Length: 193
Image (tube, rainbow, N blue to C red; front, side, top):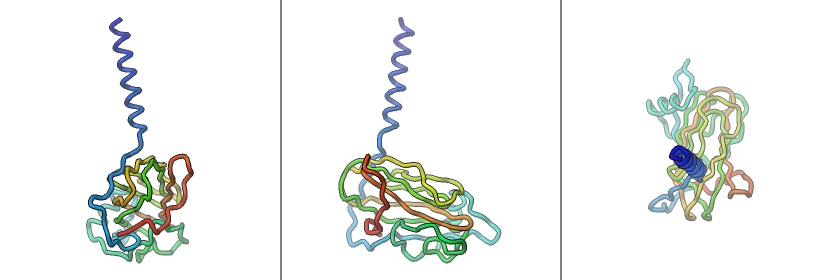
């Protein structure tokens, strides 16, 4: 009888742990809420030295740490796949570019949202203190895994993204939507820095 109770308690614990891990990530609104923001997102770039490649997020962070340069602000996160040889985002290079992107995104209403990113190549995207997008490697312009987030109140939420493009073409885009209503491209007007 004792082993049945232990098994039942263990099973209940596993069920509760699974249910909790499936809960949406709760975003933290910026505190205090920023005012007087300019549109878009601020960005600094790091460039791999001649003959070196940025293959992983750790490489991107290392390049950024060793000499980041402020770039022209991003209009938002709507940078469609480029043609080979075109510059990555607003940088002055096409390949082996790392970017540190910061600012805020505005949610007009609370609720549960789904978020994903299209990226070529790697990304570590955080909004409101939660990791909402991750890909650590090389890929053509493709989606990350969809993250489900809880927005507790309308307002501004901090954006912090590490991104890199290694070779050939680049892209960085974001989609969102309230849960169950489908994903749409995020308009540039909801970003500020």
